[in-house]
Length: 200
Image (tube, rainbow, N blue to C red; front, top):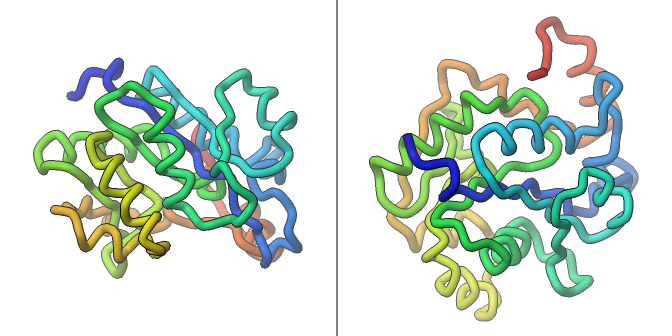
């Protein structure tokens, strides 16, 4: 297993959440706790350095007493902008990326990503068996300059950037439900009503 001291984690909480009436998804309660707290718990279990990428409600996110970083502008340019800001802020060899709205993705799942990265080069992305889940990712921090050049060139799509890399895929088709995410109030209610517990 990769040395935990060489891993940094970032939870992406910087989106506009249009389908949630622009509520800050990371701060929405799921089973009595803010959604972001589940991602933080997962990342803190596998990495020594954890950051929160957010573009609003900064004081609320600082309550976890972890570094809170922004995209550096107010354009809400998507997950790659948050990933780049994290790459620029950490000294670790590896960055583990998670979104703030998928509370079923646990530390064991994160370890599977990290193990595959240790065996397969520069970047590993999760798959639910049918499609990639690209905001669940582990990558070498040496990709920082390439990602910066891609964004400066006008690129925004995470899957297009991944096509430029030697990207490996971590297969989670045995448990695709771990990627259940919350984009609407209806999805929040549905996930809360399902049997089975979120990670504790």
